[in-house]
Length: 397
Ligand code: SF4
Image (cartoon, rainbow, N blue to C red):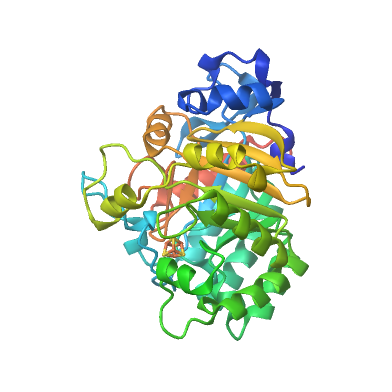
């Protein structure tokens, strides 16, 4: 078990009050799972659970950081090599905030990142490398890994290292170099997106740009197996109409994923939106192509051919998501997951810190919106003062 996960309390699901499970308890499927699953992991700390908050001063202000927490250096060096119609990076807030995917890193990006990491010295966190496609620019990705590795020697206390990728850079000419770099970095696992087991169906969903080799089915399968030899591989499939939507699709995807070397498959529903988003093409696509995770999971459980040999392991209650973890007879781990951006926004508005994102504009924010909930701005002199302050308060400094 990863260091961060080992600190998450696990409870007997029958002894946890439904009120303590606000996300999953709203699911019609929940009572059925509650009877069948032994354990629930409560990933988000309650406000009063002192041991699960880490207090740290940033920008002159003491903040409470939820434990566990992840840090994302938002990748946006160039537009993504794919153009998925459901891509959440193309959602737009009604208040007109700047979208992270529109920002591009400037010359001081890595210097600002290094300074941010020093300002987070002593904070337990995990790397969650995402945004647009990190591997699309090999030089940028390699420099990122170098800066993060250096940050681990003089910055936060890093627990897990996870990369979310569509795989494009790993099938490009410098793919082997990137793979080796991930191994040297000590990656905990790689979440590789592929939304259908059939190449043509996947390309209709992900719409890789012309000349992007990973779009080819044979290239993807070869690349996935090479990656699986180097790091723990999870395949991520976003459920949707026109994609994986029926129990038979789930069964076919699982068979194919195991041939690709995956040890885990994650089936994720489109995130549920609140009314803070504009009604743009992406939001409409989510509305028309949504496949309910609850309904598909229930249909799989009802289909003896699909779920024969499945062992239901546990439920996880996150701060804006919930999931069910199970194992198949062949040892594949499977996660069915659902997320709610409304719940995420409520948590982020609480004043406590549940997420850390370093944006291309040099700001560290407590969420996914540039310019909002800013914890540190590396373009200002204040962040230099922060480093000095954190130097002073360390007992061994
Ligand atoms: S691969 Fe990811 S970042 Fe790229 S378009 Fe698809 S969902 Fe968006």
